[in-house]
Length: 314
Image 1 (cartoon, rainbow, N blue to C red):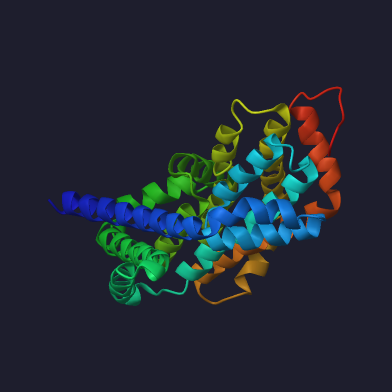
Image 2 (cartoon, one colour):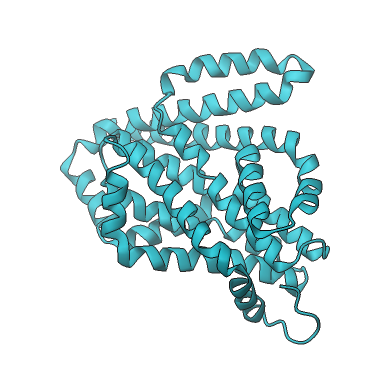
C-alpha cells in the first residue's frame, strides 16, 4: 500500500511539474512569440549578437526547443544563414539554464501564494499572460515539492539507493539516462529540475546529476530535428548544427569531468545550486568556445546534411 501511495504521489508531482512548466512556457511564449521571428531576423548581425539574442529569447519564453525550431523556420525561409542560426542556438542553450537556477532557490514554500496570485491575475485581460506564467511557475514548484515528499520514504530503503546507484553509477550510463528521459519529455529544463529535486532529497551525487544534465542537452535536440523534417537541406543543416554542438560539448567535458566537478563544487555549498551552476557553466563555456569557430562548425553541419553545390551560405 505504501508503495502504491508513493507512486501516486510521485506521478501526481511529475504531472503537476510538467504541466506547470508547459503553462509557464506557453504563457511567456504567447507574449514574446509574436515578436520573436521579427526580433531574431532583424538584430542578428554578428555571432555575438545572435548568441545574446538567443539567450534573451530563451530566457523569455523558457524553451530552447521553441527558439531552435523558430530558427529552423527562418533558415528554411532563407532569412538566416547557417552561421546566424547556429549563433542563436548557442545562446538559446545558455538561456534555458535560467529555470534550473530558479528551481535551486528552494521556493516551494511560496508555490501556493504564486498559484493564488496567478489565478487572481488571470481575471484581468491585460495581466492574463503574467497570471498564467506565475500560476505555471507556482505549479512547477508545487510539483517538485510533491515529488520530494513522495520520494523521501521510498529513498530511505536500501533497494532504492541501490537502484539509483546502478542506474547512474557510471558516467556514460547517467549521460544516456539524461538523453533518453529528455527525448521523451522534450525539456532539458524539466529533467534538470527533476535532478535538482533529487538533490534536495539528498539522493543523488553531484557527478551523477551533472552527467544526467549533460545528456539532457543532447536529448532536447529531438524537437529541432523533428522541426526540420520536410524542410530544405539548409534547415536540416541548422538542426544538425544544434546536435553537433551539444554532442561535441559533452564529448569535450566528459574526459575533463573531475576538474569540472571540482570547479562546480567551489561555486556553492549546496548540492542543488551546484547542479544548476554546472548546467549554466557547461552551456556558457561551450558557447564561448564555439563562437569563434562558428563558421567551421556550421560548415561541418552543412556537409553532414549532404548539401553540395550551389551557394554555401555559412
